[in-house]
Image (cartoon, rainbow, N blue to C red):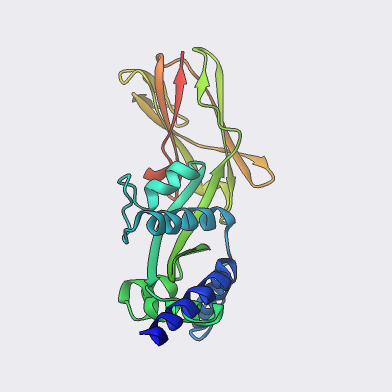
Length: 257
């Protein structure tokens, strides 16, 4: 019994020594190493995605649950909207836990990546060509470890977004392009406060209650569109379209008073 207790104490001490940041870096290295075996490019680390991943790992560790949906009912997209609503793109997650952390940072990271590669969906994410950013968050609890890997195809981010405007004001919507696509691939959709408002489109046609606008190249990878807040008082719903696809995780609201 004394020997078992000493082993437990020894493992606990080593778990305190292990560095979660080092584990995160090693997980990223191993994921990109696995991708390189299939001639896939490395996925770069993204600090916002790292924050989203760490938020979920800390949440799982502190509240003793394990899964995609947290205790607030938020999934990966919900957490992105809560923490970084300005991001536009698709986002998904993998997660794994170790009940007992191995005795080195590298072994801990290796154990996590091994678990992921043994799960078909998680391996599919690791080997996907669809993601251009990744964030990894590791959180220790006692002698255990929770890790979240957040993947995303980040299209753009909002610039200088304002949530309120006065009726009759000019509203300028801006996004910074992050996927190197030409600005002509983008449009901005606006749902007006007055659902019966008649709106003249760029094509000269009349639309009811909403419109899809062309955008202008504002320079420095920023696209923009200006329109008047003259289609009723209340909430205007703004979203970015990329090649015709609307990203539900980035529908923003401007309240016109």
